[in-house]
Amino acid sequence: MRPMDSLQDWLAHCERLHPKTIDMGLVRVLEVRDRLGLAFTCPVITVAGTNGKGSTCAMLEAIALQAGYRTGVYTSPHLVHFEERCRIGGDIVAAADLLPHFARVEEARQGATLTYFEFTTLAILSLMAASSLDVAILEVGLGGRLDAVNAIDTDCAVITSIDLDHMDYLGPDRESIGREKAGIVRAGKPAIVSDPVPPASLVAHAEAIGADLWLLGRDFNFSGDKQQWSWAGRGRRYAGLAYPALRGANQLLNAAGVLAALDALRQRLPVPAQAIRNGLAMVELPGRFQIVPGQPTLVLDVAHNPHAVATLAANLDAMGFFPRTHAVCGAMADKDVGQMLAKLGPLVDHWYFTDLPTPRAATAQDLLQRWQSLPAQRAVPTSTHAGPEEALRAAVAAADPADRILVFGSFFTVGGVLQQGVPRLQAKHLA
Image 1: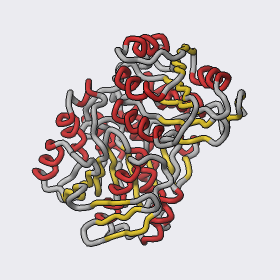
Image 2: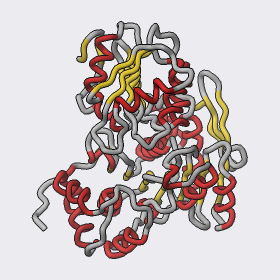
Image 3: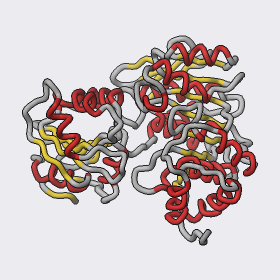
């Protein structure tokens, strides 16, 4: 094999190794993990769920950093640069720091045909394990039971909201999907479930293996008014908390699960109340109901399934009045696009459908046809575009300063906009 001199060389190599993008199963990953001797000496928090995983990881990280801990975070996918998938001590890792760990995995795989996700996950976990961390925060990529991240035993599992997504791999209903998510739970270890109505399969599995199950409404709860919120767990309370800096009413559910996880781990990872207050106030996560200042207002959201889009619609509705809403939409072909468009349809006055640079994506023309086939779709202007940047420029050209532009549907859609370095919109042109 020729020498790999750059991260892009390694990523291209990873893309060529396996004929499938997704190949469910842990056997190959576990074999390579063992040859790597991959293990963590610090507490590991693993986060699974349909929506809310990235926000949960970001809040855990922000609070732990405020408490003075050296954190390591693995999330996926990235928005613009691959290195975004790993942060050490709050900072995105340098590409050069990843290279020796890609080389370690290549040597350890001994011909095993790892997928791109499996190979890159092992490389990032190798880097994290060598980084003298105080806490490792790992986001599951797909499902839980058979995801490569599940090769690492967790000290605390957090399972966020569960809804219908990736049904070709995880099953046709919430019970099947909940069973897959439950695969990250470990016997005798805390399992935090922040979904208000968790699938019975998830609860049954956690109880059957003897996990320390924390259920919202039973073991922890929260309440709030317009100014502040409070949280109560097993003998511990926090009152007068400021709302998380991440926007959207759903973030309180995620924050409640975060505080439960930290409470469950307090013997190994004590966190003062002030670190919780500061962390929640300072947390940042691009692309999650991210509002970019300027005129017109720009909203970026990676919502890519009906459940997440329903939350996005509620959050948009709560923003107040805008004369018109322009929506840039690009999505994967395997998503329930019809439901996604239907949920946002009442709020959108102009659609800009875009192609995306991946074979998995629906074409802009496909998205347009799905919109036109909806039985109750509004008669609003539509257009198709070759990429997210082109679509956004068209939206900016058509929008008045008081309007709102939404970019949503996929990490590729939001990432395609952020890749152009759009820090701000001005009326009629990009800054």
